[in-house]
Image 1: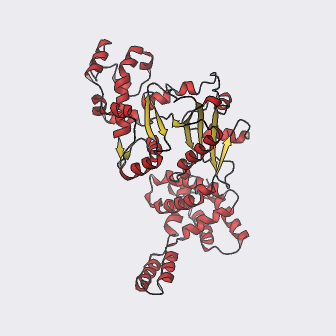
Image 2: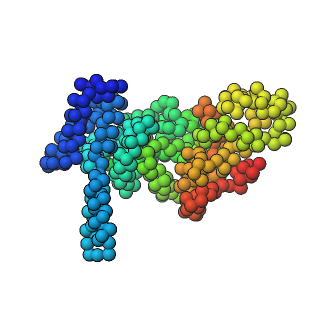
Image 3: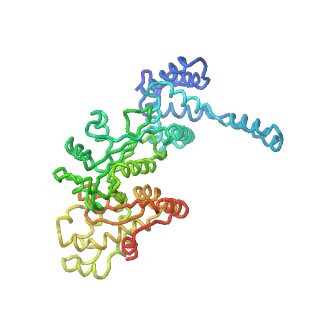
Amino acid sequence: MVAGAGGKSGEPSEKVLARIRRQLKECAEGLGGEVSTRLRAGRLAETYLSLDDAGRIAFLRMIALEFGPDPKRIAKAHEAYQAAVGTERQWDAEAQLRAAMRSSRIRILTQFNAIPQGVKFLVDLRADLLRFLEKDKELKSLDRELEARLTAWFDVGFLELTRLTWNSPAALLEKIVQYEAVHEIQSWRDLKNRLGSDRRCYAFFHPRMPQEPLIFVEVALMEDLADNVQKLLDENAPAADTDRATTAIFYSISATQEGLRGVSFGNFLLKRVLDDLKRDFPKLNTFATLSPIPGLVRWASKHPDEVAAAFTETDWKRLAAIGIEGPDSERLKPVLAGSHGWVADRPLARALRDPLLRTAAAYLLGGRRDSKAIDPVARFHLGNGARIERLNWLADTSDKGLDQSWGIMVNYLYDPDRIVTNVETFAASGEIDAAAGVKRLARR
């Protein structure tokens, strides 16, 4: 915590707050040349980084509440604009209204660009903001402005697509291990396997954050759709013959910077990678994912009637044959809650296959939030024009896979002839494109 702190609940002392307010005013006024700007922004960044969470909240609240636009100036400029509409003064009045609405918060935030690690500092600062927002909604105005600036600064036109290989710098490979969010990288050998001759890994970088991948995707080159992630990641499996590969499987997509939440470039990554792969491997004609269903078990626990509806009379007869009588069975309840032991019980796993696949189909096609697919991975791929192609039983038997979705995974298919139509339809109405087999499962 910064020296001199000592307010209530760990907040900085009045002396420290006064110093921070003075530094912020200096940045807001923007006096002096480039050197002065760099020095001011550097000092302010050092001050922020020296604070604990209580101090950082106080710092951010000060920016949010004390450096916004002047309501009186806005009202006066708006009145002048209304009076000027239809006259030759309209465009000058519009410019003055825009200037009145521009807050000093923007001036403060923009000055951090002057320091060497300024962009990364702002990305990390927003990560703090998003944490603090849960308890302090008055920070929302600052978050909106910072998100808008980051969206402009991280426009896809500024980003660089880079293929990562085993020969990439070790520090960069360590970041891939650290940031992998879908299938944890267990060892350097595991990472080397994911960068092998039949694999590809691509990442987006920003020129002001050259050592920080913003988002990366891992791809396997195969002859057919993948249906099991353990097999796909098997370090001892022989490398596939890329000359015979017809299918590219996107099996892991990881966004790395929490501070860039809401800044969308994942769809552009997939499109750029798809073009790159087609150029290098002309025989590729199928582009699909092997994706987790992270919200399935959690959703099922809140919608027991939906799960019960997925069990047919035939399913209950099969379960009765192995000693399970009804949904309240002590053997069945732990399964539906996401326990793991049932996987080794082959008769039970076989009996549960069809009803749990139906539950997964109902979740992916019917689960909604604001008319959109409720599953976060589904929203991403469907929003980018994919089709739900196939559900795969016990495709991920890791603890995480069983906890999330009873080990079920899904193939999302990117058909170039349908992508644009699917994007427009999903955006307009939330309608989901799915293969006939998946639709039949959802209809039970």
